Amino acid sequence: MSVRTHRTQQERSEQTREALLDATIDCLVELGYARTTVQEICARAGVSRGAQQHHFTTKTELMTAALEHLFARLIREVRGLAAALPPGRARVTRGIDLLWQAYSGTLSTAAVELWVAARTDAELREALQPVDRALGHATLELYREAAGELPEAEVETLMLLSVNLVRGLALDAMIGGGAERRERLLDEWKATVLDRYAASSSSPSSSET
Image (cartoon, rainbow, N blue to C red; front, side, top):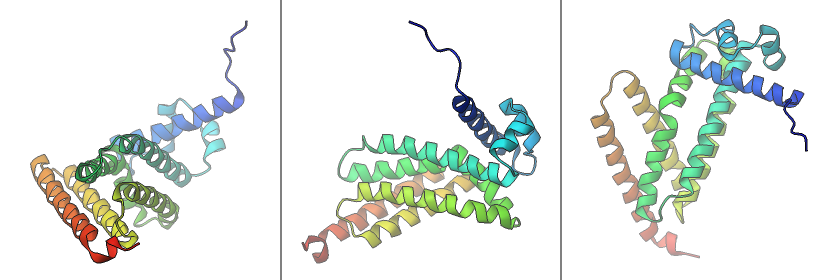
């Protein structure tokens, strides 16, 4: 029985694309947007400029696809971890920890670099907006899964507040904010969310069928 050792054209194309996306994220994190060039990305990915242009015709397209690639990977990881969350109050508090895990680190650094650049780059800003909305929708779905019987409007409000809190904390960490302060603020937010959950579950409307 023969064993196939050669990659198909589609496999080679997919690996080239993924190498470019991973190299783009690495450059954004290590060098920042201003010093990230397509030439540097290609060098790190081991890809020629011609091959790069076959996949992404502009730098904006490459940057946006890289962020989308990172979002998708993190959402898959968080979904896997969320599936094992315990029921009840622990599910709520651990869910906030997972949200911090997803929105901090590499994701936060790369996203901040691109959003700061997008402030004065209309093409980049327009390209990033649907990617950011898609991440918000995916995060909302995770919140719905953890929320139980909470009203839809309440779930969305808590999700948006949580996302903006962890984004702010991630930025604070980038400029030297301490871990102790971050943990204190996250603990305060967990307590607030648990209070909201308790209030919603005990309200008359929550028991109506």
